[in-house]
Amino acid sequence: MKPVFVISSNIVSPLASTANENFDLLKKGISGIQLHHTAIAPEPFYASLFSEDAGFTAPDSSPDAYTKFEQLLIASMQDALSLSGVDVTSSRTALVISSTKGNISLIESQPITESVKKRVALHSSAKAIAGYFGFQSHPVVVSHACISGLVALITGMRLLQSGRYDHAVIAGADIITRFVLSGFRSFHAVSDMPCRPFDANRNGITLGEAAATIILSVEKPGGKESIRLAGGAASNDANHISGPSRTGEELHQAIEAAVREAGIDKNTIDFISAHGTATVYNDEMESKAINLSGLQQVPVNSLKGYYGHTLGAAGLIETVACVHSLKENIILPTPGFEVRGTTQPLAVSSALQEGVYSNCLKTASGFGGCNAAIVLRKAV
Image (cartoon, rainbow, N blue to C red; front, side):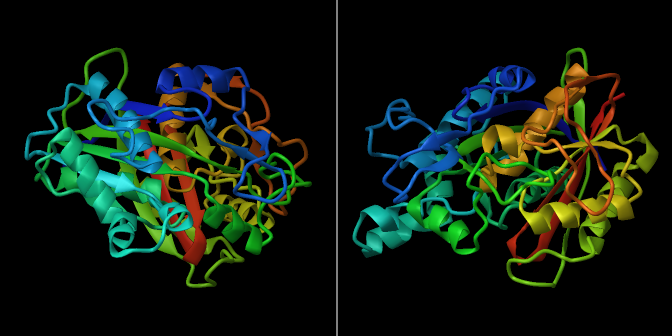
């Protein structure tokens, strides 16, 4: 099968609106997480949220033509497309949209009419966004809990490998609403402090909102170095609707399958970008999976301390950061981490590391016991 390359990317977050700007701030250790007092909760909470006056109105449209969720996707896609030269009007260009909640905020702010029911459906947003840009291909929607971003990337890779498409635009976003925040709080999963992945004092997630886009192609880009999406796989724990595997075996299976497809030796993996939500059970499960894969000595980080957990955008945002890390030969630290709090050993990155890095493993897990892993490689 033809190799698949990352040819452009974007992150729109409370930190910045381009991938380069975001990564520059991450290298400086700057986080978007702050204490917020908003109408979506009766008491203050930590999160990474856009300011209320942040404007994302799509050009050539009325302010209310697209929801905040859709405007975020459009803004992210516009920047990535401007860097890629990809023709979205070609039938050889695919569109994949990733989100866990989409326009769910509409049911909080409006009467639930037939019109609102249609607008809340994720395929409605995908169709509107495809129409805005002029895509000729039918958009694909991936909504698979917190592995949505990675599954969307794997889906895009498979579409290109099938030979049907030459390019795939993968975009994901989620916004934090009363519904989302209260849902995680009902599980007692939200931290009362900025999240602390893999730390002994971790006590839950910090939520965040953002959008990200990655454009994949079978055509190798020019320039100094290019990055391949070389392998990917998904698995399921079949354990519990909200509690992850107690053994890590199933994430381990996804890691093994992704590495196998990438055609590399596990000993050549230079760093791992983990899901690292800072919940007690997720971080413990990931530590077990990494040990089962024999990767406990490989530097591992979590970026949740910069962005919070951005749900359907998380896998994409963190993959963009991985691409930049490989290109700049940098491993980012894990904000909030001080003392290891997992029963299995991990080489958690606690400071910026520089070296020569060629291969990266990215993992994710989510409700329903879902897991995913991808491998990124420098192209030779």
